[in-house]
Image (tube, rainbow, N blue to C red; front, side, top):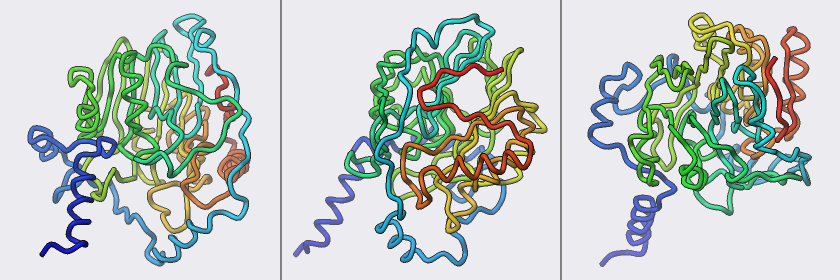
Length: 349
């Protein structure tokens, strides 16, 4: 007789297998390409240096209990944000470089008259389910229809706070091309994105699209949308033209790759570096704010914007702590830290 526990396990398996938000499964062709990657070993992708996800002395039970309790100051009642005007954003000459940060890791860029967006997430949750990992409340909220036509979507990895199914499906009609690390294309094609619109990248791969040079570069992190980890690659991105050079760091613990990228592609006019969701229990996969500032120095970046904060509470620090610590570190080290308000249209100069 089939027990209730077996039935529940089967139900969970089929739910995970067929619920589209979990993404797709790599095709045999994709796996063949994985096997040729120097970053793929023993059935999963690896970092450039040893990267345990949890600290050696971390207690998983204590970590779970701490998350259940939550930070002492809780979530902000509301975060003041700017109204975003896409027509205003698109004004200006082709040589003018603009950016707007929509919170967390979503940044809209205008470079050489072309639009690029990084890790677009316009849902109010960072999970496969709408009732968990809810976003903070904004005074002005943003939706996909607020965006102009997007020439290039840059995806760093497949975690829910960076790759959102609903956002991708809603914006696809106004997207020219997606650039994704190895394996992430399986999620997009499952959601109905045409394969010919997707460019797949391994670390150090370079591309030329609409007069813009792009390169997929290493990050120190991991991936996974269900129970398996590191079955798809994670990356950062370099974006360059004759007049400007930018770096999008996405999620990454501090490591030697920042100096490697700086030596190969720097100096940068502007770098977007994660500055939130850190914790002493996972010090290798998310940088502390002081390390984020040091990363901008390693990259040889003229200016830095702190991202990956102010939208989701995925760690236990106070919601303003990331920028406060980054501000202090930047001041101490002579780093120019840009602090745009969410939704604000800024020019890189």
